[in-house]
View 1 (tube, helix red, strand yellow):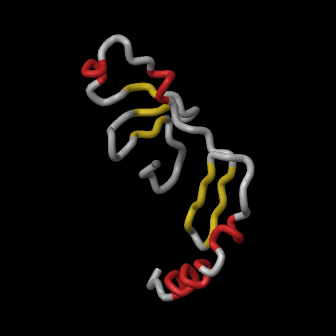
View 2: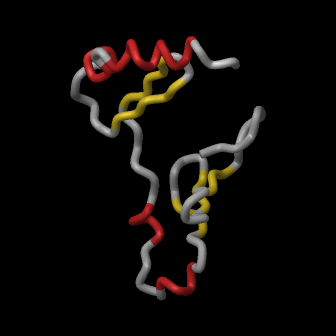
Length: 91
C-alpha cells in the first residue's frame, strides 16, 4: 500500500485502481470519479478494517475477521517452505 521507504504517509493510493484513501481508510478520490455519476457514495467504498495482522519472516498476513485459526495453524507445513525460500534469499 505504501511505497515509501520511511516516514509517514498522509494518504494511500491503490496501485491497481488509482483510488486515493485517507490513513483512516476513507475513500478520498476515486480515479475517474465523474465516470461513476452523482449516485456513487464514497463512504460505501472505504477500506475493510483489519482485525488481525501477523508477520512471519518479513511477510505480512492479514485477516478481516476476529475469529479463526492462528497464523501458525494456518501456515501448517507451508512454514517449512517459507523458511526454505527466505533462508536462501541473498538479502
